[in-house]
Amino acid sequence: MLQSDPVFAIIARTEPFSELSGPHTHSLAGLCRMRRYGKGEVIFHMGEAGDALYGIKSGRVRTTIVSSEGREMTLNLFGPKSTFGVVGFLDGGPRMATALVVEPSEIFRLPRSASSPSSRRIPKSRCM
Image (cartoon, rainbow, N blue to C red; front, side, top):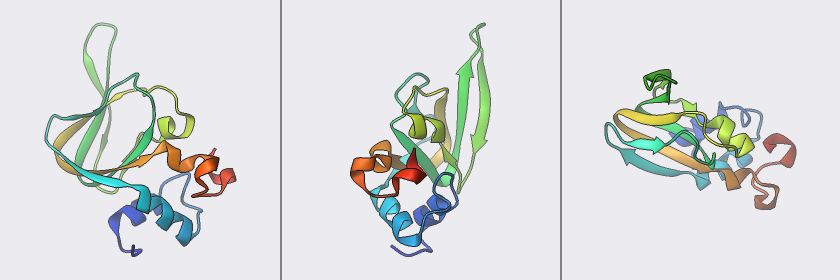
């Protein structure tokens, strides 16, 4: 995988991975799986387990919550080269929002298991 690879580039500039060496970043990029999403598809729902980090190669994603009055509220709008789901990736807790695809998108998924000490993909001190 070349450093010009978009997955590598996105991971390399994302906390908590921005200080990793090239080989460690390559290892993480190799664990990512790219998927195409259509407009309106849900990537994850609020309350689901935070089992992965996501990065956008192309397209846009918005994160939303539902107010106590039942209104959908947009928290963030993410575009190409952005990552989302970082908090859930780090702590494994429930998702704090729902992620919806705004336009056709190519999105990669990095599983949380990639940061576990047993995976030995990245130094423990950098993961947790």
